[in-house]
Length: 187
Image (cartoon, rainbow, N blue to C red; front, side, top):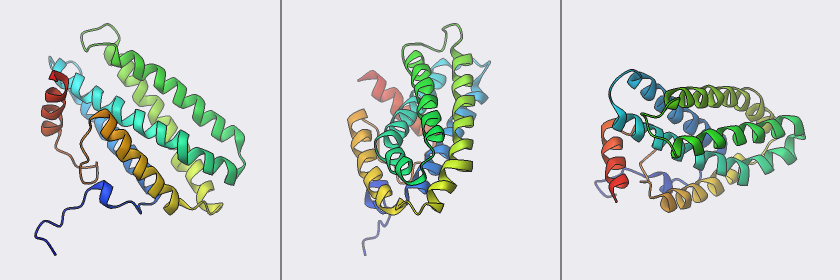
């Protein structure tokens, strides 16, 4: 075995779909927390870098859910209200994401928009993890097969967006994230 046994997300295509989505939830929650720590500080570059990462992560996450996860779950659990509400929540998040992508940290309401987006995402995550995911498990949705399909799509989306394939997405150093995003923004 080679000395470097570090694996990237793309090397582990057999990840469970629910575990993958929950890891995304955890990552985005940390990013919102990182942003909250910068409120009131004169750190517009850091704020912009974190918000860019939040927006990118959420765009990928929602696309994976809408293209792959939700259709499979919708068919299995037969709870159209739950699934429709999730899509409406995605639409609201996408609207705020678009506003943030066209804004800068010194714009009026910038921090408020990030805060509201975080609150919306927190509510959405609670519904998914507390209601949708348990129903999907109970209905015996093949989350392994979905996870492989989602990971493949995630890697393609990340590549399209120019994002790195870090090992698991959870523990990337914030300073290196900001440095990479600053380099990306300058291109």
